[in-house]
Image (cartoon, rainbow, N blue to C red; front, side):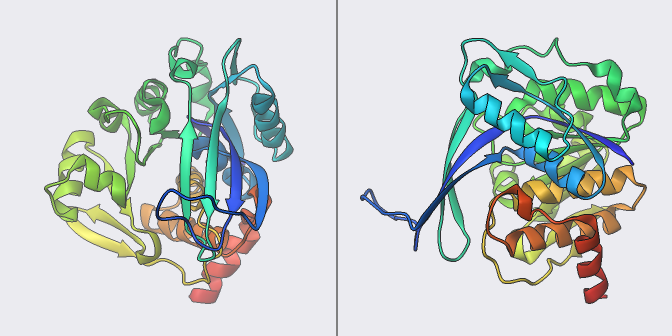
Length: 299
């Protein structure tokens, strides 16, 4: 069983299901509601655990009820949370999520910046016993320290380069061995460049592997300066919430298990597609057998 450390955000999501997402300020009425755990790194950790890996989550939470619920759910999915940092007097991160009948979502998140002021509590000595690291950009200081140490140790370090409210620190990119942008985040980081120009620029920064996820269009990545493409698996989309996090988690786990980048992308794409085809919370994140079955069906 391979160990993957996930550093970053854990959130409590309040999900409202609507026929359609309002396009202007208006009172709207949900058809269903649920509370589930969310957050890039935390959901990736759950995906790793459900796919047979040993997932460890490093992040900060407040000492509130939301934080208790977040931790309790992660434990239910066998995610190791023994090093989570609880901070007195602070609120844990929360989000409101609107999901329409097409499975698309609109997310509003609140995260107290004080949650991520300190990084000196990170148990970096434990990285030597891990097989891969995954970090998101919601806690860039933590991502930088974790990825830098992982690179020094020769451990794959995957950066989930999604949209972030803060300016992206290029040092974080530089210290990741693998950088996976979302399409909107790559457009924001390199607004005047084509996809191949932007990815080549990123590869010059990190001297490593770079790619971009493009939803139902699949994933494109650089191979010796040339664009390669891994198509997405075709499914009926019900809910895209957390699909990107599942993708990153399975990509990191697959690298830890020794798969090539191309094979890791295929496995990650299959996992994300299965997640999109199901409604509900983290219990619908696919198991390893389900991922492998979908891959076999396409081949």
